[in-house]
Length: 347
Image (cartoon, helix red, strand yellow):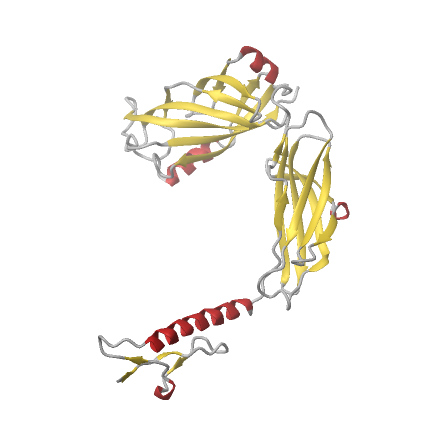
């Protein structure tokens, strides 16, 4: 018979090794001998150990959790304004720390912020707009409000609630946009709001992509977007998008997807991007053959946003350059260009 050591299942000290042989719980028997009691002891020990770990976890109370119940979608294109949207948040009773740190249902707060390109334009306290119900079975609270929006744009609903551990929070982003058929178009000052590779590092090292973004981020290019009605009437509306160098001129066809409420961009199967002399680094004097397509998926009449996906087809050295270290990707590789628009103000 051989005694062995094991982890003593002491819920107060769950990670304590008991080296006292007199408290050894089971035996290691020679091969061929089967002891059903030993297997039962092992199963019981495993279950108790898991139970103790659960108890340790539950001894560390959680901050309140707030879940979004509605709306299930976050973009709305109403027929007209103002429009109403019901929002609801649920505060479940946590599995751990519920009795020690119950939430204070009266501590719930809510604010509504209108945003433009990530910047806050105006903020309002909307806590009083919410009503509260309690689930008699679970004790969970649900807070519901019907919010009215009188203008297009991006909005954030930010809610908080407290317990003895601290403050929990949740954020819900909503977009109120114009229907594509009613989109009036206009003259917009566009800028590149983001530039990323898909998949990462498929063409440029990240540092070079950052250099290119630094060069073009403050460059504004004008774009006259047609109205949604004109796009629907034509079926395919021709347009040239003059992206800042080196991304170049892209001749596209616009079409409207009324169900998705988007303006689709059907670009060329092949066009040229010339990087010669752009990056202040050696080895990037390259000429890229690419395709392009995209979408305007935020039809805010004052701030239309979209993206253009530039598929990399071939990379060659520039005849006027000092060498190109980039190579044609072995698989699918795209540059995704975020576009953000603002109206061009009359002088």
